Image: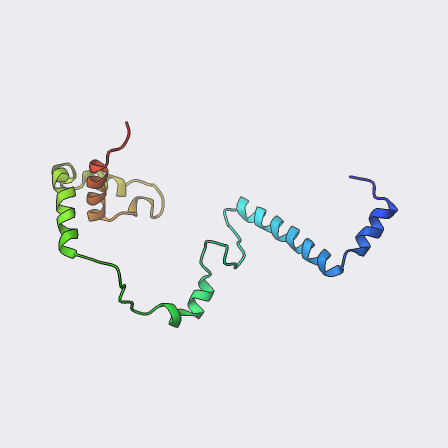
Length: 137
């Protein structure tokens, strides 16, 4: 610990109380944040720079954003999507027929939800997409 001189004490007293309180609160918040991280909880400020949504604000303003949209500029051709699924999945149909890997995975003790991220059909499509993707060896 550094030895404080009379000049340090006088300088400290010249810092406005509001500034000292704000700095103290920042230090306290950071200490609580670090404790939360150790416990697996992230405590974040409600600020537009934070990437996580403020769910309280979203609920309060639901009438502003939760309404049907024409989605102008978004072109959806369901027939084309079905044809793409057939094109991608058909070559791998014998590999995922009856989904043995999916059935094995959902019966493993991976913990809550881990083995159930994909449903039965989603697992088949994912299998085919990974098969069609050129991954490095």
